[in-house]
Length: 465
Image 1 (cartoon, rainbow, N blue to C red):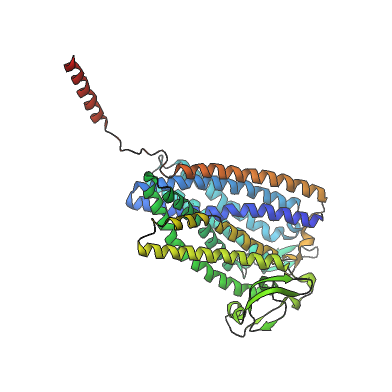
Image 2: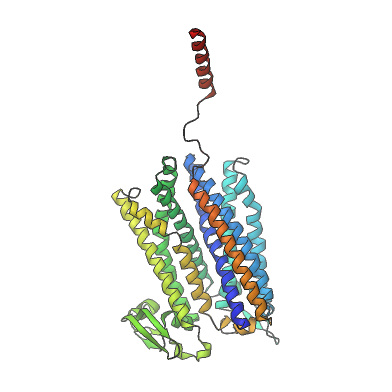
């Protein structure tokens, strides 16, 4: 196989594995902050046990994110040396700032978060949880800024030898698509983590272990309430992101909709089979006018078609088209589940509808699937460029043998899947134990009562003699 294709496959695999963990840990970190704040306010021990449980899961996922993230740094230098050389002056400072402002912040307080609950005061432990959660957002800020600049590059110039040099640092950071991507990614992370909590809590309720019910019901109720707000908000953010994409990356939007010809008042393709060779869609199911209404907020808005540029300048249509529909489909399912939760809460059946608990358990992977599908849309949709409109992916790859890339890809496949299995094994054991693991199921008996009972028993024995 071609070294470029192999390098792209390897990077897609490693970045796909990595993005699962930040998408999860950002949401869980902020849920822990909410639980910790509720514990501080109410001193209800249920919140404390939930903090302890989800902190363990967070620590495991955080470690997975660190391990898979380190590999990407090396991969950029080894497999994508052309990219590293060309963009070092622009992207390099953003990566350094991510380490200095986010990773060090998280590393400095995660120990207090994990092990300091009984060693520091309640307020200091809450502060540590809050700082770690803020650190996850700061990390996302810099990484999304770098990625967004590659999608909508601004505030730069190029040198004679092809290097990109920033002319305005903050112009690079706050490039045209950055606010939309950051809001979209953070909300996706909150939803992904939130539905994991919903699904695991639904399992505890469904299992029916009495000791777990108070914690399970509180977590279930809190997260479903948040999801009923966040999922619709994500759709509104996605709509604004789409308008930004239409302005700055029209060919990506054309691929998302498999739109070949530029036209006004276009229909939306609900589903189709894009035929790139013949530049048409087979088996298309269309809704008239709705395409322009959604994409331009106008009934006769113009939508650019793929034929506006040569075939060599177009992104692969089928992966982008289907990935977008997977993402939207997952989002609509999660919206339906969140609103069903509101209805069941209103009817007083939120904790007794066993079918709904099973549905919520099935929703655990949907946030991850939607996130991965969204990243396919983002990354494949900007092809054939790694820096949109300026630097092609073929220029970014290292001149290395395809066999070397294939062998390292095979090793990565084995190691990453072993890591994932290890995570499932340990996290699954935690979930089976439940949030009240290690908590006595009966109230403690005071020692004075025990001593009195023993004394009474001794006197009774003596009397019998």
